[in-house]
Image (cartoon, rainbow, N blue to C red; front, side, top):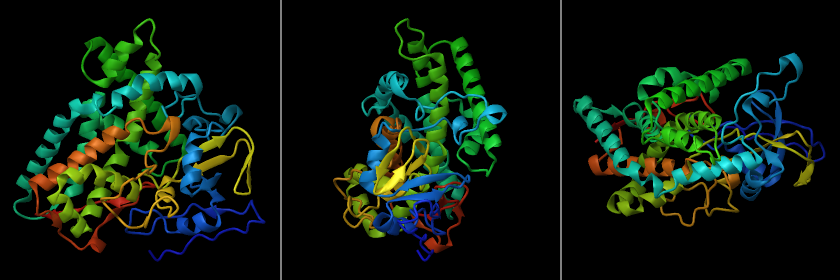
Length: 413
């Protein structure tokens, strides 16, 4: 963790900018610089990766409050940064994170119960079977040597779970995954190219829904929502179902792959805690909450836009300013967590904000929890002697998105 910390601007010069802190090479984050920002400049104007500016919110209480503050709204991807006239891109449908007001409340009332723990229980045996099959394939293909836990397990599992739950055709992955990765910033595209990917993903979602409408009802969530949308008293529309598909792809694919890889690496580099977990697998759900806190789901960027002027920690935030609460920093705040930089798989309580907070908290949080819990359970059951096959410092890292993760995770058992 030797990366220099970001310079903290003088409080008397509120317009001074810092770059968004970067994660140290070979780590998932969070960036070390946030520790100093939490102490000296908890609200600071930063130069964002796209050249725009925004106020970084680094403390736990402030970030948690920002996510729930009605004065801060998520802008449409096609509307931020704002452009007018001939430069303005065509309007796009809002994702669930971008819906506001009564529209968001109606859709949330319909969709959120589908992702409750009880309603998702039908997925538990299916995820367990998928995870078991992937482990069996990895072992069979290893020929007694090391295997890559990312390519064999952490990468394929989230997509299969997403397809099974939502109703995405796995065989269409070469169509929708490139667009999804572009929207997550994985390809270093221009804003125009990112918007083209968004429109293409919306077009794909519309085509998929048309196919499902022709095929009739079924058990997956897309068909369930379509059936609800057809009711005369429905609170959702067909366009909302399109938004659902886009939202699930943007939030439920790449981020889950990278977080799963980082979580498994954290376990494998803390062998004493891993042994304790093997001996008491009933503690895995508690461990999962700690892995969600300890390993950033995102280092940045959660763009909110102020709808009115207000002051926070002496900084005057104007209507139209971007505000960026950083869960990766908030979840390491010593004011909220004892020894926050220490992995403690028995930590409780654990009120992390890995999934945000307030009305726009991640809809699929329980599915993510279930997936990671079962992924760990199956690995510990099938491969009790699982360990890294190379020193941790020799692991290659994927640095294509704000969330850093192992590109490969060589293991043996």
